[in-house]
Amino acid sequence: MSKKRVIHWFNQLKNNYLTGYRLLYLLAAAVGLGVGLAAVIIKNLVHFIREALENSFHGEYTRYYIFILPVIGILLVIIFIRYINKKPVGHGIPGVLFSISKNNGIMQSHNLYSSIITSALTVGFGGSVGLEGPTVATGGAIGSNVGRLLKLRYKDIMLLISCACAGAMSAIFKAPIAGIVFVLEVIMLDLTMWAIIPLLIASASAALTSYLFLGQNVLYPFQLAEEFEMNQIHYYLLLGLLVGLLSVYFTRTYIRISGVFEKMKGPWKRMLLAGGLLGLILFLFPSLYGEGYEVVNQGLRGEYYHLFENTFFEGWHASFILLVIYILLVITLKVVATTLTFAAGGIGGIFAPSLFMGANAGLLFGIILNHIGVAVPVSNMALIGMAGMIAGVIHAPLTAIFLIAEITGGYELFFPLMLASTIAFGTARYFVKNSV
Image (cartoon, rainbow, N blue to C red; front, side, top):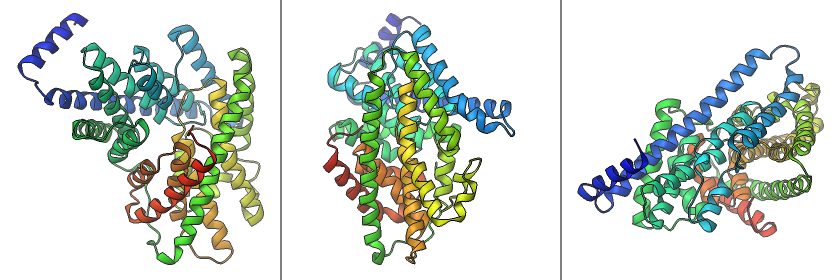
């Protein structure tokens, strides 16, 4: 069906049946469905690539494959962008914000597929980034191109882009409420009844699509070890402060390393140097490979032995001092690995790395407190650390609270989630005025 016939059919439908808000409601549902399918495709592509690689490269030399696989994935990304797509591909959320604020909501049509392909190659081959940013970019492109194809008003196109972003977060994290809060807090859409109903529809339809294809289980299953007690409130406040400072480290490290590689001329030189350093870090610390969802899940169970598997440091967990040093190294090197992935040419998001660092920071905090005789639930601390890290890095405390509650099912800890997220956000904002 030609573009003209689509517009003609749509105009007839709009004039005869879809008057008032009904048109926006229908488009919001359609955009949510499209974004939900995009999230499913990205997830399945990554799973397919990773499974194929694991079946092909396993055994006693697995550690050595980890060194080279992320570089191969990034090389494929660069080849796709330079010789097939022939247009730059952004990392997600910054591109959407630029489109809304500087480009009249226009996102090029290649973003409908380019972010899916490049992020799947980056993460599937082990790049130390997440999938949420590219999913948001794909969603924004769906909203923008649908709105412009149907010749909607500028105001309605902005709403469709926002609906798509809400749907992207809803689908990739299975967190429909957090998706809406994210748009209101980060995309900064005005909270009005004109906007909220389409957002609800888009977020719900995207989540239902994700549930249909990926199941209804939460992303990070969490079993409450101990209910929140008021006599532990100062520990949660302290954790919020520490994770806030860790967020500052994340942002400044990201900016500084990115700045060094941006000064280098030639993408191949950047790819070789950043990719080589990335491979070395992943070789020494395999837990930094990929999104790190399995590591976060184990951290939410209060476990840390997995961090030492297939490393040269397996004996370190027997010593408390060496254990602390090793987990600190894993935490601090995660942002380095993430930034090197971007610098080399990979495409991805920073939500997953932030969750990884937050969970392990909370885990370490709980381990140290228990070692010195303060009995606290380690798994609770890991969950609270995740929220604080998102609040500090993204500068979005409300999104952090609802996101962590939804993706873990940890609603019983809503109050400490609020406390830690607020403290982490305030601390990060004091030192760093703008988010990554």
